[in-house]
Length: 569
View 1: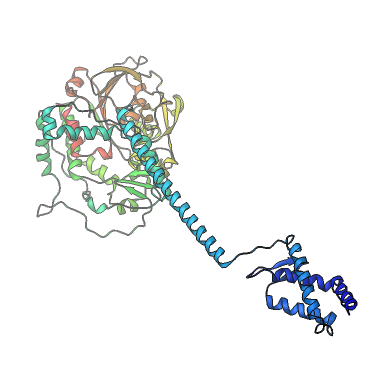
View 2: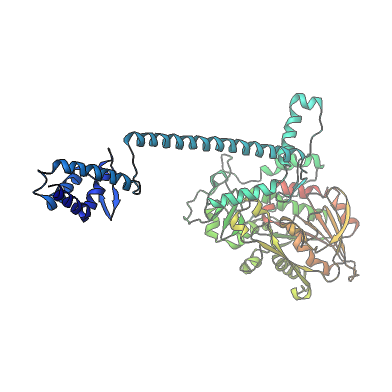
């Protein structure tokens, strides 16, 4: 019996099924296991199925002997268990109890929460540090950096630091002026405005669209040609003249029976408007236009000033050159009307109808309109170009009866990278930035030298056409006559006939004057905004033959007429 049991034991130990039993026994030694033991490519997951396999295997090999040999088999189980304990050391088994898993999850959650708190803490410290550094930087820059004294974009002298006084400190005026100086002259102001414009372009500002409330502006109706001339005004001392002339011309503005201003109330054809209007600037197709609003009082007063000058200078030839702007020349009339503007050509005709017939009246509207597809107006600036001024010069020569020079007779220069008044007035509109201007100029043949007196009375030498290659982008129009000066003298050594002229102008005249140099021995240029002397006396003393007014349509206002008239008294 013993021998038979030993044989069975050996047979079981040698069988392949016993190897399976050994591995199953190893898994049975693990108490609460939910994992699978890898072995010979098989995975066992449930204890009950394992026991079933064991019993089936044993039954296949020793079905009739189990009842008789139960004691011996228990001993064999002990041997199998001992053997599987040794083999289990070589089989990787991961054991996770439910308590261990809960502890692990809890620790993981606490770790994530700790990391989040740490990140938030560092983030708050970073933001606080950055803000403090930024404010400290602004304070240091505002306090110690060199402050500008002139604004290229606004073309003006900036506010000056006020002098301290006890009276000013007590009434608050000192601190008001100090605040104005501090903000007006803040270092790197131009660069910061450029950054602002770039940021605005990211969210659509500066694109092609129309905005603005033109209902705030009521344009006067353009009358038909006047049957009477504008009156001659008695000159008054400068400090009294403005109030007196305002009272006189108030009655000349056309009114309704109840005294209200005549306004056209007829319905207008609806026109689709695309582009961008900023204040009175309209931007479309990467080009800007200044909207023209007709003013009845200013028109009557301007004509009256010309009549007054002619009456004072009967022996001089008086020329008036009214220059339209790009808005009136280049945009469709129906669009102009939709934007609230009157017909510019009708305005010129009405103004000329009020002038003395002995005044040479030149409307260059038709001339510029005929050349509107050429570069006669800037894209980013309110001025006309040198080419536009040349076409007006040819009209002047026709009226005067002299032969104009051809453009090919002059030396040509061109200065690129010009951004004008519209660009800065629209806060550096990105569409305008993509369409910069260039300044074309033609140097006179007889001389290119001038002697200028600035608004402060300082005399200096410059050129008719100045090299502005290195000038800032906003100042390249100063190519002509070195900018606006109170008084400018140009003497052409090539002409000895005693011919002379005086040009009364604002900045539009700067581009026109160079073409006159080769027709006169002496050319004098007066900017009525800065001239302080008596121009009537100067003209009489120097026997000036030609008095030439060159003004753009936007200058036809009562205030401007006051300024022009004041220089003749």
